[in-house]
Length: 133
Figure (cartoon, rainbow, N blue to C red):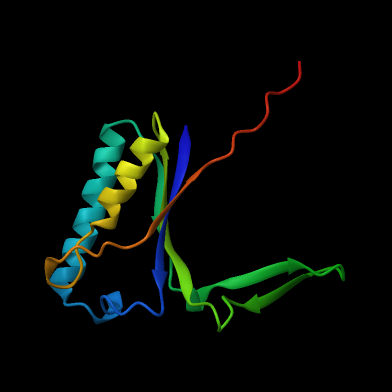
């Protein structure tokens, strides 16, 4: 079964500073942890995809406008307090295993090497219904 693990951050978070304020060695340790996590998932045959995302201030919200062109606004909205920082898609045997992977990712090191314990949302990827013959 495929699961999407969504790495969530909050602008209201007071547990640790934004990564742009971390010491360089803490950023490097965090990146190394994420790379090692991805390498293990690949080795275990569970990795489908995973990406970090650019900061929310680069986002665009797009809607069909019905007037011939898309309606594009800067996003996310100013009142948005939480944002998606990155994701993994894993293909593993059970929801329990997806939760284990999410818990490991949640423990990524932050400032001073302390585990971030960041929120990781686990959602099963819907499968398409069988094609009719």
